[in-house]
Length: 393
Ligand SMILES: NC(=O)c1ccc[n+]([C@@H]2O[C@H](COP(=O)([O-])OP(=O)(O)OC[C@H]3O[C@@H](n4cnc5c(N)ncnc54)[C@H](O)[C@@H]3O)[C@@H](O)[C@H]2O)c1
Image (cartoon, protein in one colour):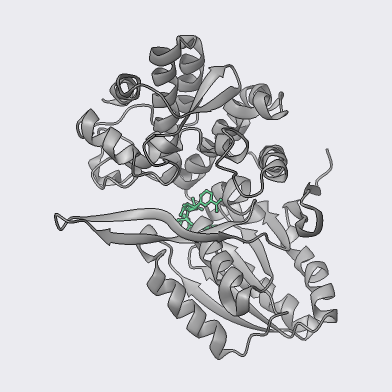
């Protein structure tokens, strides 16, 4: 494979390319050029404060060279600022620049920046173009591809307690292009890197069911290089994972809830994971409680283990599949058990708040064989509880 990689998301007139590799941010110029020809004169750039300045500077230099005036808005991403308040302030900011319908929004950052920028783009003036420039592994292989955008909603329950409902508000808004510059990953901290690897491992465990048979074995063969973030391997890892996500999205752009498959399979590990992700007290390392709360990828890792063990209980899944997954997750430095979980009853209740749940059912993605998963909505509660018991330290 060459150093310059690209994957096309085949969505007819909403289709787009994902450019992957070292230094590919320079290709932003070629992406903006046709927009400039169609009248774009401004760009609103949402920048993640964790990204080294040189990448935002590069975007400014490129836009200036084309005669496009860029406005930078910087945010420090947390799940609590992925909120309606931040969304509103971004709308006020973009409106104050005189941004027109043909002017692009550019997201430079992780999944939080990408989701917020995408939703601003989807709704400002009923929709303006967005270019996603993901800078975390998780956002490269997952969040920036497929057009899901949005923010979290904080609600107060009748008993006065509060819940953060993740990604409850949003829209599907496909980007014009995704530019995944592998060089941005150099500054990413090891825990964030591992969190991104969790989504890659998830892809491996659904790969055979979505026509990407080789992915799991390729990752196992390259596990040392992947776990140590060897740059050439990272570019290939990103390309292979993006190809999987692109193929799933092309067949089910808007996650059709009437069919139990398609994009929903990408939620493997997520329904169990969401039940524990927003619990503030959980640490990925039982000996170091100060690492709480869990990162998204850590919760997904635990959720995938729980889903395997639940499938063993519900439908006799071969335990070797869960054992292999645990060994890969451990190799990648991801948690497979966690201390401090609440009761199973609480956890199952939290699963039913997941937005993938329908009126009376909890939809979970469970493995049926190596590399293949299905969506079920009638998993017995005892099986879900067996899943949580398996990850309880
Ligand atoms: N839209 C989707 O389809 C989709 C899919 C998966 C996840 N998500 C969302 O993505 C979010 C998680 O994204 P994430 O894992 O990228 O986390 P994140 O956006 O919170 O970023 C993680 C941390 O990395 C820092 N960072 C970003 N780029 C950096 C860089 N190059 N160098 C150093 N630090 C850097 C950020 O400042 C932040 O502190 C969640 O909100 C999740 O809901 C969306």
